[in-house]
Image 1 (cartoon, rainbow, N blue to C red):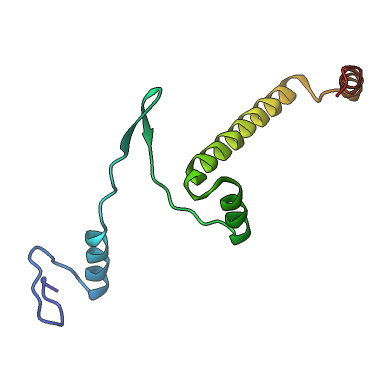
Image 2 (image 1 turned 90 degrees about the horizontal axis):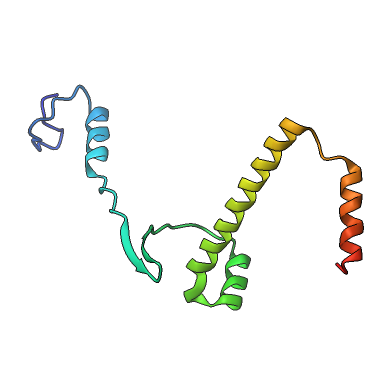
Length: 121
């Protein structure tokens, strides 16, 4: 096929073997380019921000809106992700330490529980 489709339209520079290759080439060509990352000034200076789209369970969304309002959702989600990432980093560190030093003995946990009770926790 030499740049001419069944509908008679000529597409210069397209030398394709089949309509399937043409459709694939046009689908790739018609994709919109990625939007550049916005720089948003913050109290601490410039910080990179990205816009994301995600899906929530309806009940989660309803409760979040009731508790924090519609305008605070981005900050709330950002904080939740930061906390989850911190938890994952801590767990990775604990796993690494356990691989090096072995598991924490049960006696250590009971000493910690005793100390917390003594301190009023």
